[in-house]
Length: 142
Image (cartoon, rainbow, N blue to C red):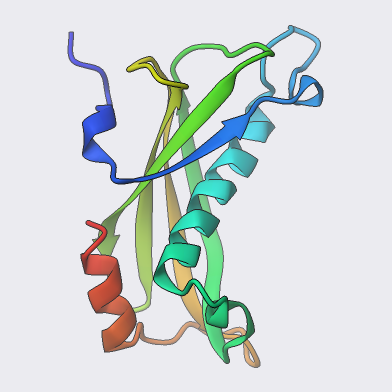
């Protein structure tokens, strides 16, 4: 049976060591920690788009609107998770990141997820259209 997500579908990667404090009473990584791992993947992509950090201080920027995550197998400390992130869809004011989380150096999928990011005017908090330059950069990550 083909896994839900294949590691070869991703080009952008970040490794995340599992901390002892990431585990819960059942001795595996708590589900809420996966949202943090996804955030690390998203930030890695934003850094690749603007290595100088301009997106952090610009008048417009990203805000997370939604996260969905499918947990495929439990992870225990010690471990390292590799988070693959790609752009799956681009709309006028938002885009989707798709994520695959794998055990370090393996094809073992531990979770797959989607994050929806809305581009906003930071002063008003209102959604704005994605600029042509950002759209072009995001399209390269599809």
